[in-house]
Amino acid sequence: MSFAGQTVDILLINAHLLTMDAKLTQYPRGFIAIKGNEIVGLGPQAQAKQFSADKTLDLDGDLVLPGFINTHTHVSMTLFRSLGDDVNDRLHSYIFPLEKEFVSREMVYLGAELGNLEMLKGGVTTFADMYYFEDEVAKAVDQIGLRAVLGQTVIKYPQADAKNATEGIAYAESFIKKYLHHPRITPAFAPHAPYTNSTEDLQKIAKLALFYNVPVLTHLAESKKEQAEIAQRSDGLSPIAYLDKIGVLNNNLIGAHVILANENDITLLKTHHVGVAHNISANIKSAKGVAPIVEMLKQGVDVGLGTDGPMSGNTISLIDELNQVAKIHKLWNKDRSVMAAVDVIKMATIGGAKVLNLDDKVGSLEIGKLADIIVFDTKSPNMTPIYNPYSVLVYSAYATDVKHSIVDGQLLMENRKALTVDEHDVIKRANEFSEKVKASLISQGKSIL
Image (cartoon, rainbow, N blue to C red; front, side, top):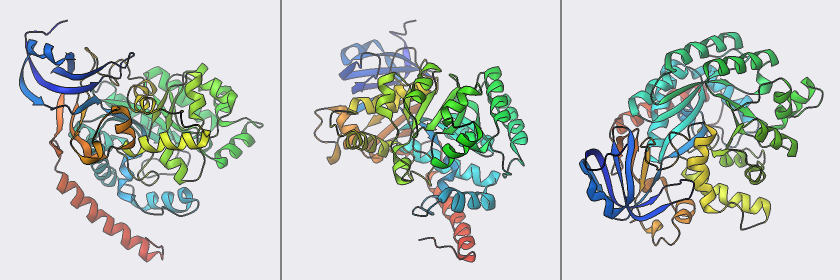
């Protein structure tokens, strides 16, 4: 359908477009026309005269690309950011006890507000999340306007929202039914990991996910602890091979981390079209290793970028991942030519969309796709000059260079100002919450430094 000659809602002109389509088409001086929630026109600037618009943004050469996709995070953990960063066995000795004391509906909603705000201001337009009370995360997403795949956690241990995995599955199923047809929220099951759920529960979740046609988000092949426990459970199988044996590897599954993957594991991921969320900053900070992403990409596995939670990678806007991914893999493979900047941007956009099975809707700038678009200000010193736009984005850009953000055709940030949330109020309430956490840790004799 052509909208040429019609009035559109938003017109971006004089933009340097990186479409991230199959041909990596660029328009060094181009335009995008948005009507409703769709891209209805794009191309060379000369063609923009076909359209008139209710709102026109003259970008004066700024970079325009599809919004970044964060394929793995725990957004509400923003409220625990900077705690226990250098503590051994942080998950079991620090994070789990903190969550036991503080996780509540109110905490999850406030943390989600803060995290959504951070991602909005850092160019993320879609994210995949795993946490508790995920319906509270959904409320924050609804308010602020991002797009999200939201997984309700299932784990065999008692948690704030479920006493066991059975209750967790029931909670997740209720959440999925409620949000199954939401325009921007894809509900999902989120079994914490293979070793923190039973074989029977993992199989039940896989069957329910296929019934509802929703994703399954999980931590996979992340640690030696997981590897050892699964090997004991399955007569020596790797976590990925174990999931294959019990029949839960499929296109709905998205595995986060996937550090400990051998050649056979990678083949299984490709065969079953499992998506991989690569979290380089969290992985190297936790000293767990470097995932074999270069080999996965060679074999055709769908890989996107993730930040992990704000207690793991600390920042969740994804910008910091770009630089780390490019440099660490060059070092790890002792080859400066691997992980080229354009490949990193692919993973941050269309690659992430493929991982989340949303590539028919987002991940590239194409007529008919949803208008999830970000604009990078090219006038800052660190963005000047621009010879290779992909290199500038990967090696030079800061989150603060994101100037405008559009999700589902709605302008959510203009000139760095968030339009759908009171930024100062969210930060104020987050700081007030942190005082309660500090007081509790001090009373327990734990250091916050």
